[in-house]
Picture 1 (cartoon, rainbow, N blue to C red):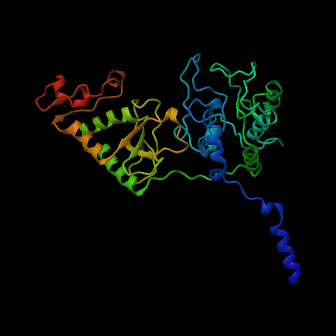
Picture 2 (cartoon, rainbow, N blue to C red):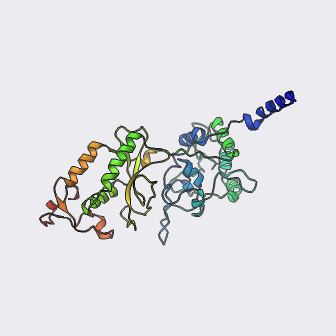
Picture 3 (tube, rainbow, N blue to C red):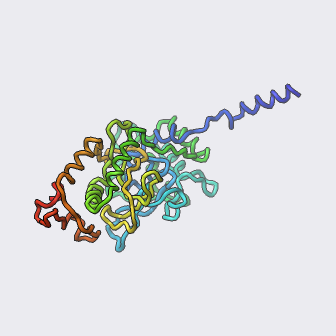
Length: 345
């Protein structure tokens, strides 16, 4: 009986299911996407809106809808990652389709796109075929899983990665093995360090200070910094943060108020928050701005070194968008440019 049990244990641990190491998204897959894919698939206007710079973007999938449509006759819905929806089910309701799920007995759409590129590789260090459209006016077809066979027959050179020599054999096999394992995504959201968290509290306390004057200054700063990638003195390399308006105060998870423009009416009470930027940092969207104790002191001196008052806050109409500091009066009631804080002139 003991020998039979020992034999069963040996057979179990020698089976392919056990010896095949599970592929980790964060350890194995994201580095492949970062090296080969995010040059195209990392910004808001990525082809087919497929963003491969984070697990959230990979699970969101792709969409046929274009981000910029010059022929539209009505306002277009925004589809900003980490802002306008959260989680795959929410993105499905916005007509994003999975590129990871096996459907109808077929491999995942990503697997088939990679297989198409792997089966028709482009020669290294050679000119691209003349009939391969690579211009900025090329049409992204964004085939759905049920449309892939027709797409592949008409576009045999359109596999992924597009218009490059492709993945190495090892990387190709790693991604395909991950997809065969069900494409699990282990989320590892970036967290602020202790030094960063301390400075976040200081800056959020400033931004959310009491009084009309402080509210106006915070609004002005937010409307100028909302696109910036903010980093802190003594912070971790590669850690960047974004200034947002949230329904929740410091100490609670950020709940972004996702308005179309930074100077749109938030529609409710809100707090300015600093949240970590998730996903791969790419240069085309990387506008950096450093924050420190010295910078905070400088900001306070620029706006509050002289006394001024504001009886009521301006609204969010178009008349205030170019300069929400109008009208601002100093304590003498003067409305001349000299009455305004330095940066409002």
